[in-house]
Length: 255
Ligand SMILES: C[S@@+](CC[C@H](N)C(=O)[O-])C[C@H]1O[C@@H](n2cnc3c(N)ncnc32)[C@H](O)[C@@H]1O
Image (cartoon, rainbow, N blue to C red; front, side, top):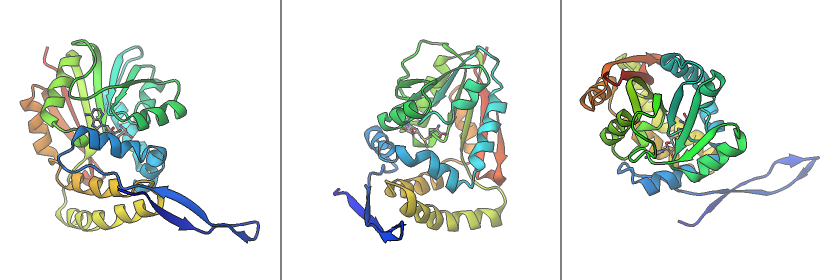
């Protein structure tokens, strides 16, 4: 699709200047074809972290602390951060002294991450065919990535393969608010507010239509827990954040 342009006229030193901010319309569909998902993230990589902060009203920072607590890595442990994007979800693990490996399949997100966080170990890779040996990691985590993977069961099975027996998996993902009135407000306003904010600040606003569709069609807390158990993860439990807008799921690879 041809690029479209959004024109703004900020006032600089009392004079008006026309500027052109280039935007595109790259989005995936709910088929989540890998090339479409990677291309979509390539085209929003430069503003991804900023928009996350704005759209979540800064709550993403406390969600990342909750993920770290749930994984509880010991210094020196090997932690896989799958679908790590620009590496923002990996930073707390590096700061805790873990050997975190940040894997993603969007080159745009990886190169933006390399610029911002050159100290992280980025690897280009696909959740459905991870480029690691069996039992390579003490723990694995996926923040806001699992929903975008084409085949959830295949990814959960692949994660089981690369985590050591007894090792843990923590998934942080958008979920379903549990209090019905809150759920009604959320599902009414999500399709209005998120694309509205994205049109103002994102270089790829169409991606945020996909975001809304993918959140609404994603399994709720119990369904995701069942899926994890069906794929071989043990001791699966979940915890809601912000009344269930986000949920943490954790499980262990059986010994
Ligand atoms: C919403 S971003 C999350 C980034 C980061 N984890 C965070 O919390 O900010 C989702 C990421 O999932 C990645 N992704 C989607 N499908 C993938 C797959 N099959 N293999 C690897 N990465 C994938 C995308 O490229 C994108 O960077």
